[in-house]
Length: 510
Image 1 (spheres, helix red, strand yellow):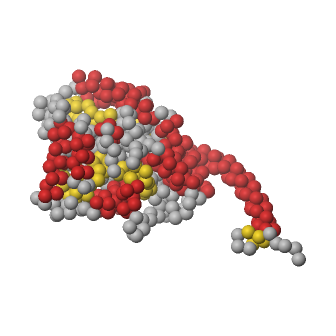
Image 2 (spheres, rainbow, N blue to C red):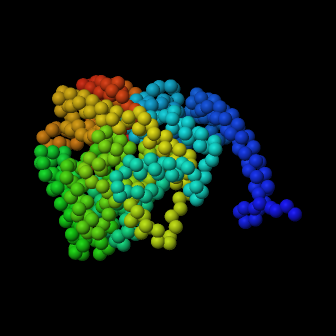
């Protein structure tokens, strides 16, 4: 009897070799199909880029812009607002770089959408998404190269000791998870946040977002939430001419920590976390003054809490001089949350934290996210990080942003309505005022300026801030000096012809 060579539990070697040969043939066939599919994919991408938008509804009725707007109003909750609904809503059918195109083929310069970080329909990102979608999309229970490659690239951008990643679907979800991580690690409940902050739309993060819970329809402040003043050096208690403004604002955080510790504030739950956006967008482009975060972090950690940097708005090089906003303050948070630009329009967000915090979260309660970090969105994230690096977008943001602020300062010298120009990189706020002495916000004027830029010059902007008087600039990172010139020339013409403003006119929802 011929002896059998066996392996893997007694399976005959001949069978193993036969299976290997079959697998090799199958692999060759598969690769040939993939090459053919790749060619088809390239053709499909070219066709998709030129395919006109859907022009009939689900029952075959012709669709017009007015019809789409009508269906939007009849089929969706009105809490889901439409930009420029008070003047003329925009029907967007295509995007490229820093431009969006409507159904009439008009090209709108986009100064407001930081979701398209690498530019709308960035070819490198589109191809990565389509290629992976053609091969596989499933959940993170299975191993896949995209998960670990994206994590490697992301962690390479994070300072030590940040070394653990959770992939999720949105910035809201990331902040919700950060809240859970902080409470699990500290076994505390109390959260400190900043006035006018916005951390997302889940039930829990609305509770730590004064921008939401203090607005009409909000439920107000929970007893375990502690709100400190925004470190606003234009309208706040400590102004731009005070070199100690940062530590002075931070003292309120330190005092709040002390009150929570001694039981004179809160529910007795101890400090769990301090949340702050590294660049506060809805607050009107507020950047913490020098020394603020360092003192805040010291106080929070001394009280047993953790520090969360919300980078949803300004991460991935937007600030120009740093990849993350918190790096401007020479600090390292315990948790970073990120979203919006990470997938260049795909639902990709993340939480990055330390081994110590991640290990505490591994307490027997499994964390599973069906769509978070699927291979397709990870492919998008890899392409985004590669594109930011290969195209030098961080340095580009620094250069173009400085050029824009310089041109804005020139405009401010001619128009007193511009009370302040602030920001870093391609995260800029233009604060419109009634007069420069009282700094009273010019909200109605900001709304008119926003509407006229869209209607007369095809430039998309957004109004933000507590009084909606700040024009916020956070465009795709491919925004160029020529785009700055186009925007500044148009803004100059609008300011020259602004005239009397109806204070009671409907404001532009952006």
